[in-house]
Image (cartoon, one colour):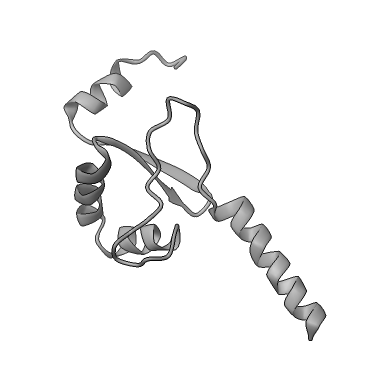
Amino acid sequence: MSNTLFIVGAVLTLLWYFLLRPRKGGKDAPPTVVSSPVVPIPIFGVMAEFFKSPNTMFKRCYRDVGPVFTIPMFFKRLTFLVGPEAQEIFFKASDDV
């Protein structure tokens, strides 16, 4: 029983570490949204809010952190550029950037 709990705990920890944990970008990276008022569990709350009502989440994140923000979604990070000013930088950048 004790070994089984240890193995399950180790697997869950590794799963969180490699797939779910928020990763920090460089110094110029946009802010990462890791908390949600819908479900107060870090990371999982953001995913639950996104699946429940993405439009409401975008409005909340825009109000809280501004036009550029990142949300962790499983093993990927999704960065959103809200509004023409934020999108202009992306579309005018060269392919090398």
